[in-house]
Length: 326
Image (cartoon, rainbow, N blue to C red):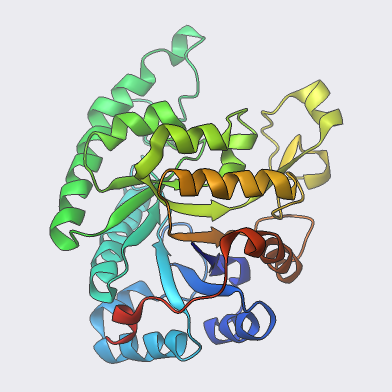
C-alpha cells in the first residue's frame, strides 16, 4: 500500500504548487489522484488537451514524474445519467475520455459515480435519489431507474472500458444521492462487468450507520481503490434531527455530521483496523486522502491524515514507471 492525495483539495492551486508542497512538507505521499471532469473544478488534469496533444501530455507527465510521483487514479465523478441532457452528455463524454486517457497513460484505475436518473421517462428536471419506498409515490422508482437507465448505460460503459483498456478498473464511489450507494446496489451493478469495482470511502458509510470494515469483507476483491476521509458527528443535532438534513452542508456547525480529517472522527485504532481489513482481502493499492473537512484547512488536514496513516501503510515508494516513460 501507499498514500496518495486527491489534488482537488487544492483546486485553486496550480499543479506545480501542489507537487512542490507535497514534496517539501508531506514526503510520505507518493502518488496523486487527479480530477479530470464531472464535478471536479480543478485544472490539474486538462482531459481534452492531454488526449489530443502528445507534447502537452509529455510535459504534464514530466512535471509529475520529475518529483517522483506516480498517478494513482483519474477521478471523473459526475452524473452521466442526469435527466438534463446537456449535463448527462457532458459527464458521459468526460467519463469516456477519462477511460481513453487512462489507457494512454497506463493508469489502471479511474474513480467515478454510478449517476442518478430522474424518477420517470417524462421527468427532465432533477435526479431522483430513491432512498426508500415507504410512501406510495416513491414505490418502484428504483426498479424503473435500474431497468431503463442504470443497467443499459453501465453495461455499455463496462464493455467500452474493456475494449479501450482491458486492465482498467472503473471504481464507483458508493455515495448516497447516486443509484449505487451501498453493498446491495453495488452487487447488482457489479454483475454487469468484471471491470466495475468499488472506490471505498468510509466517510459515506459512517453517516448511514454502515460499518466500512464489514463492507470491505462483503465486496472483497472488488475493492479497486480507497479514499481516506473521516466523519464527525454532532450528537446534540443527531438527537433532535437525525442523520438526514436537507440544509447540508450549511451551516457546518449545525449539521448532524460533517466530513472530517482522518482521525478527527474515528481514532487511530479504528484506522489501523481499516488498513488491516483491506490487507486481509488482498488490497495493496493506493489509499487516497480526500480532504473535505469544513473546519480544517487542507494543508493541516492532509498533513494530519498522513501522519496517522503512514504508521500503518509504510514507506514512500516510487511507482508508475510505465506512465512516466510516455
